[in-house]
Length: 212
Image (cartoon, rainbow, N blue to C red; front, side):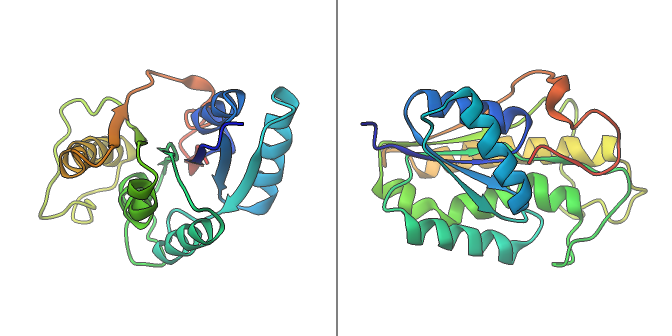
């Protein structure tokens, strides 16, 4: 039996769920990181309807909250002695500017900082499980630039069309830097642009939409 373990964020829908299905078909044990228990239970049912023998579990986490991310990472680590594959697939489009409980703009917090923090919280487990892999789902960021004096764009009029692309660029830069730092450890880090995927729920409207 395949003893590999994967953790997939945004696994309740869209790319995250499709990725979880693909991994389950390969015999990998998959932990679905989801926003709440109800979405988790539904995702488990949906995936098992496609892969009846899937080995799955749901792990709740609010990726807009740094304390929730740390707690989820600790719960995962407490329950597993290995992590072979981490797929960061969650993301949001937010119509209006929102500030998280940590005082951080929601798009920046969820689309970038969550990837960074969760990966680093699980890094020891990944390196001890090597060969392992981290996959960060990104997308085209066009001519986006990161304003390092105001990365959350708090000094400008909010627009999700302007706030989202820099978070995609940040994901790619994070991926490149982490790959360099982990060179020789057996942990491979990749960024993946899946193309325009219309059925994730993200593009249905411009209210708060999340792929997880």
